[in-house]
Image (cartoon, rainbow, N blue to C red):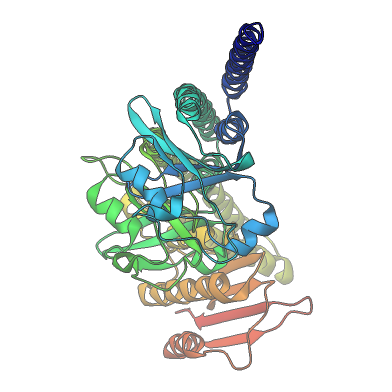
Length: 565
């Protein structure tokens, strides 16, 4: 009997030793798994992949059936992103929208410290689960910090085997959370560096485009395109203030339904873009479509959520325009990390637009100087030669005996006199100074067509003939400009055209404006108030308005009015 007691004691010691060895081996394996998880998380540089690796590693380390990572939103009170492990796509679809941080999940947001529960339904903050949600019992939650800031929380439920999460599980997940914070910070820095590189490339591209001689509208489109691509925005609109009206005109629209927004004039008050212009600084919203403070103008932002409006030009300088970027509802809001580089890009874009304006002014000055030179040459050379030739022919006509030949020479002299008059009128038009030239009919028509380019989305074709600046009375010129503006506006808003041609001719007897497009044509039951106004303008001058449909589709408008003679 005595011999058996030491044997039993030895067996117990051996069993205890084996248990300690197993525990040590389990601890070693767990530490090894933790190191592998840390390395796996640290290898990734793309933020979305980093977050996915974190939640997958957490589930494996503590043998949890379900795991999730909730990213805290900018308000610090709700979840803006929720990644899960353990649920199939079908289960996720049946459950419905991801949680936003209410109930037990919000407990860690309000109190960012580790939380272990043997029965999560018994916690005071637990409100239960939505329909079709799997039943969950045990719970472990650990905050993830990035540079002392709580980035989000790891949530783990239902440890396999029916066991509860223990202190070792909490310690392992807390260690993983520290490594995860470092990995997230690295991924953010990498993402920020990549984004900054893309902004720099976009700035360089805009500068090259500007120096290559591209028009202002092309530069504006490039600015909006690159900003939309880099920020991942669904919509990008470029608007410009309309002087002394308190409104904005949408010059360029990308994404969504651009045809409904392009050329639209909206009040500055009650719009995100108008607020950015008034404050001369970026303005954001998390719900562009539903914000009651930003509902001015027609409804045009359905399905859009986070948005930012950035003025092109800072306080103390003229605002050249405002860039509006918007994402779909439910997507991440614009953060300070994004707005900072975007603001620098906007400043560079404003400078590019200002340079484009200066270059246009220089080109105009060069054109006016060239006109002066041509006028001098015509006066000093052409007119003198023609006058001398006319005098010679007139003198020679007295020595021609044949009556028919003498008449022909005299008619040629008359033609030379008419030619001299035309050249003198041309010289007068060429020598109009810059301030007067800017108010001439030719310049006004060119400006109107250029301004319509942003609303149409392309440049209309323009041709002009005759002495438009000298032979057309001011009243007729004003009527022509009103008719042209209405015709181009109709083409932009209703015609859905891809080509518009504008022709303006002044002959000795009449003035003719023709606008033709390849759009849908003039609807039978459409509004006619604009067309009626055009016809009344023609009739007030003794002219007519004619509408027709070309054989290849579209519409053609011809407005004519008589000239004085």
